[in-house]
Image 1 (tube, rainbow, N blue to C red):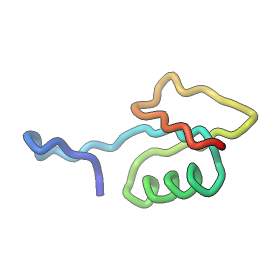
Image 2: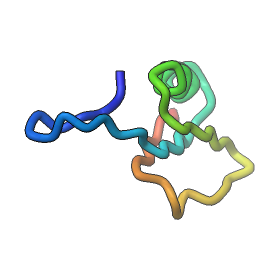
Image 3: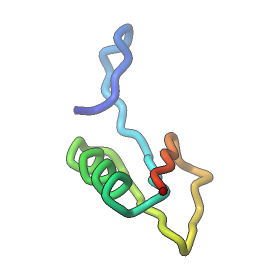
Image 4: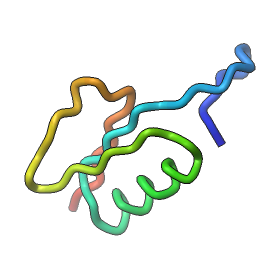
Length: 60
């Protein structure tokens, strides 16, 4: 399932960077990858999120 706006039937691939590789962050990343989105996972080592469309934070 790709993101789409109800008024625009064009499907959009999102660049998603999850912060957190655990159960929640890793699980969400896997689901978004399976849906066809470009997903990068960041952990304690950090990384660059400047080109991301969405940056969910999933940490305890």
